[in-house]
Image (tube, rainbow, N blue to C red; front, side, top):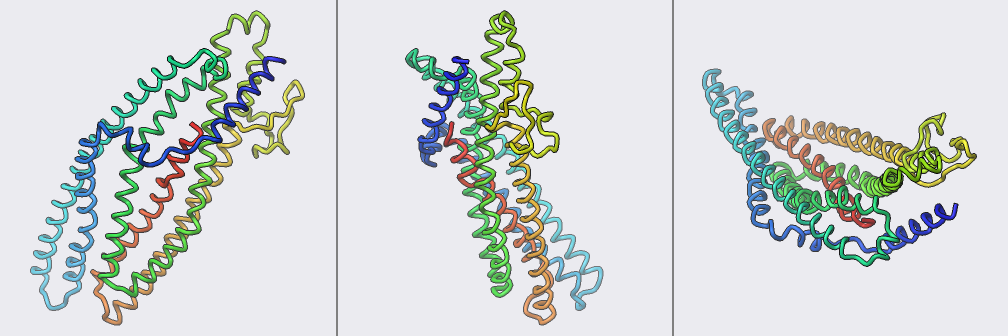
Length: 361
């Protein structure tokens, strides 16, 4: 009983220290990847070229759409022109695919180098700590820091930050192209997209919060299992198997304790010892995160496609009135779709995803 209280006290102290810690800045994260800047820069060049090939295709294909409905050109001339346009688009497309492939290879290699270097540095720091540090910190928690938490840094330095920068640039380019095609249609599309984006933005922080809580609960479960397995002779000598199972189940979340599935304390049954654990478990937090995630996708994609249809409706009117061509409308529609996708990416790859996700680690 005293041991449990001591563990709870240590855990509370550690959590308080973690909550007081400031999240790392973007520059601090980038500094970890400084030795790999050369490879990352080359990867960014390939990334820009591959994405530029994607953005230029709708403008080229717009000419093909206009050619198909042009009544002044005979069928053979139409087909010849369409063939020429499509061949150009295919060449650009496959060139972009090659650039994306090379980019992915370079970023993956850079990420592995960053995380390997970081794990070695962290392990060296841990081993050089004073013995009191090990008295106050669980070995399972340290193992989790060397594993999953360093992976978060890898994702932030070589994936998240470069992709956020690229997404912002792509959004700006798409918006410029949209206004170049039709200012009035672009204004309507941006207004509708902004509403969807503004309402969806809080979901990113909620998902981040639940992700942190899930990681913490999983870390506690790993810590309890590591301690028990490391001292298995003692556990079996004192017939404490059930006690250790209960400690582990507290943080994993035993589904049998929730007969109505919803992981609320209100619906939780007491365990065989009459206890009702009220902390976070992976089951409890995972269900809550799933609800938020489902709501996010339902609203974003439902609202996004609704906004797309309204924009297309007004676009047809502009085509009928002769303000834009059908090919221009198809190109515009592609850029609206890209902008919507980029907005979703910004929500997922914003600072809360990785920087705030590292706050408690």
